[in-house]
Structures are given as structure tokens and as C-alpha cells.
Image (cartoon, rainbow, N blue to C red; front, side, top):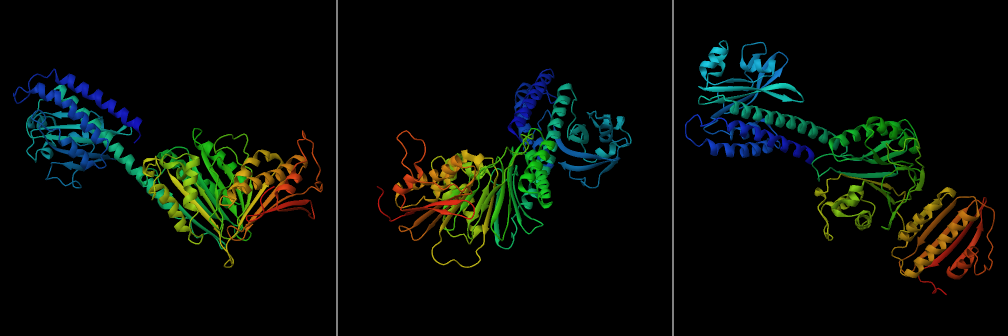
Length: 594
């Protein structure tokens, strides 16, 4: 239950307490003549307020009736209670407290009968009976049903849930009670609190049932397909108490490929969970129909907007080819995925994308990114709960994820997934400012995809990076620099990292500025640490071969090949059947830069 709803109920309780106190002040001395009515009145409001708060947190009818019984005192000699539910034409008992002789399942009374509870269910108006004589006079045909315990007074009050009378609360007293305006107002207030408690209990049970259903449906990612292995984890809101809007799915597509989706519906409430369930089903259906990643997200965006115009969702959907390792990925405002190379190096894969689902319906632009996964490489998809939980921002959270994803080998994906969650939920070496994930009130969804090796690799694993920059994506050059620099994170000579980034940027920029073609970058690292070799190739489809020339002091171009000649250990231009490739190499143990 949200804080706003709790505050609203507290205000209702306080208003009702003030009403009861005002009425009680007009009542004069107590029925037992003790003369302590003023003291009891002062404490009645506080007791009722505390009981109301406790009722709002109960999970069962029995607990609620036990709490109400604690209000008994000489002015309110409450000794027994029963709750009746009106089903069609019959009133039957569903709970009782302090009444030992009646079996819950045995009592039945037709709604058209003379029983006081039946009259309350029909009319919605309470019935107060101050003595056995009044009970016998007003309800001669059924008064014996209430007289078996030797009670001396009764009250039957309607229970209203979801805006309609659904039951009756009967309270019995072991001494005659003057049914004054104050006593009646008090009993009406208690009945209203009990109604709210019952409604909260039903809502909580429905929420828990939906939560358990959704959690069980995301219990695992499935076996994947031949050549691709997946592992997934899901941690609900509050560290395991309630499902929110995060989800993942693995879908076997008709063409033998594998569809993977991960998403996050705005909000951390059951409405978000309900929208998530419907959106998840819709995306699964669109993917199974054979639509491409861009079409799947476009359709899902319109679907979510039709469900709820006030909510949006972030999402990544990819289609994986097990034969080639090619991933076709579309992104809708979701955090970028992470690529783990076979040696443990982790790169944040910057993907172009569109707005979150449900927003910007007039654009429907979800570009498809092509990423090739090679053997033993792992792609990690997650929701922002994995990154930002525990008080972290996107940067510090990314460092924590990288440190948990890098160790070990790619063979055991499940161990890798467990290690990632443990780093968030129960870190072995907490950082300053870390908070337990259970306090963040955010879901965590995690999905790992590995391309399985065809044979056991010989020798140490290398590293590889493949990037394509299109002519209309010049702004992506900065993202390419970040990924390329991540490839060299443990290079022995830091000055060579700056050199490599500078040279790669020059080659990519030359293609984007001086041709009308896309630029394809391939970077490979091979060899033992300390003696490794970096080979970078940039290919375009233009036949214009670059020539080295001496640029003037104020020239804004013509420096690329000069820099290659000065800084690279090797470089050259290679004609291709269509276009050309400019490449350079740097050796980790090579000569110092001039």
C-alpha cells in the first residue's frame, strides 16, 4: 500500500476519532456509574486510532477481529464477534471471535429471513439491540439464534467493500449496553475500519497471487537454441516481495533463430506489473509472427499507448542467428547492453535507438543495430535496477557490474548471473554509500546470451571489436571511441592507448567526412600480455585511395596519413573488390613513439 493511501486513511481515522470523542462527551457518566467516563473518553480516541492503523496492516480476518476485541472495556463490554458474508440469497458466517458454540461453516440464514443480520444485508442500515427483551420483541422469529451464548446486547452493522454492502459484522456484549449516539457512532466507525481491513486483505491476496504468477513465469530463460546459451535472473521489487514492471523473455522464432527481450514498465506498483504482463504477451506474439526487431518495438509502442497513455516502457529486442552469431538489435530508451569478450574484457555497446515504448508514436523510429557475437562472447542485457541500486549512478553502477562480470570463464553462465546479482544484493566488499538492494524498491532483470564454441580454443583468447558508423551517425563517433578505448583497458603502455584512439578516430572521421560511404572498423588484439599486437582496420566502399601530403599549418585536413606514418608501428592501404581498407598495427612491446 502506497504512502499516500496510508496518509489518507490516517486522516480518515483521525476525523472519525474526533467525531466519536465529540459524541462521547455528551454521554455523561458510564453505564456502570464508576464516574471515570472522562478518563475513558480521553483514551478511547487514541486506542481507536491505534487499532485503525493496525487493522490496515492485517492479513487475515481472524487477526482483525482479535484487534477489535482489545477495545473492550466496562463502557463497551464486547465479548464476541462474527462476520457474515452475503452470497446471492444466503447469509453465512465466514469468521468469528469469542463465540465458541457456533461452527463457521454451519450457520446459514436466508437473506429474506427475520434474522437481524439479514435485514442489515438487505437494507444497508445497522441494527442495535440493547437487551434480550428488545431482541425478542423486534425479531421474534430468530432471536433464539443469538441467545445461545447468554449475551445481553447486540449490534449488527453493514460491511462495505468496493463501494457496496458485502457482509455484516455482529458484535455481542455480556452486559446490557445503552445504545446512545456515542456508542452507535463508535460501532459504526469500527465497522468502517473493519471493512477497509477486509478490502485491503482481498486486494493484498490478489496482488500476491498476481505477483507469484508473474514471478513463476520468469523463473528461467529456457535452454536457448543450438549454438546459443542463455541465463537469466529476476529479483522483484523490495528484494523479493512484489513484482514491478521489469521482465525478460526468450522466444524461439519460426526461422530457427532466438528472440530475446528485456524491458521495464514505468512504476513499481501492481498496475505496472499488470501492464508489463500484457506488454510481454504482445511482444511475444509480434516476434512469433516473424516481425523484425524494429517492427516489433513499433507495434509494442502503439499497444502500450492504447493500454495506458500515462505509462511508458523501455525495452531491447534482439534476434540472434545461431549459425553466424549475428544479432539484430532494436532499442527503445533502454540501458545499453554490455559485451563480455572471451578474456573477460567488458565493453559497453552503444546502440542507436528510439524513444521508450508508448512515447513519440508519430516517429516509430527504432533503427536496427547489427552486432556479431563470436565464440565465447557474452552479451549482457539488464534493467536499470542492476546498475543504479544501492545508491549508485549509471557510471559507478557500470563499474560495479563490470567488476562482477569480468572474472572467471564464460563456460558457466549461471555462475556469472549469480555473481552479478550478489554484487548488487550482498556485495563482498561494499563501497562507501552502498545500500542493500532490498531498500531500493526497484526490480532487477538480467539476461545473458553466449555464443557457444564449435571447438575448444587453443592458446589464450584474443579480443575483437566490430563497429559500423553510418553517414547519418557521425555523432556516434564518440561512443565508438569509448568502446575502442575499453578494448585496451589493460594495455601495458597507457600512451599507446591515446595513440590508438587518435589514429582510429582519424581513419573513421576521414571516411565520414571525405566519402559518402559507411565506415566499418575491425580491431583485433592477439598475443600474450605484455607482448600483444593491436591490428585496426577501417573499411569503406569508396574507390578514392588516400594519398599522403604535407598539410599547411592552418589546414584542417590531410593529417591522417601523416599521423599514421609517425605513430603506427605498421600501416598500409589495401584495395578491396569494392572500396578499400586502411589499417595500422601497434605492438605492446614496440619502439617508443617519436
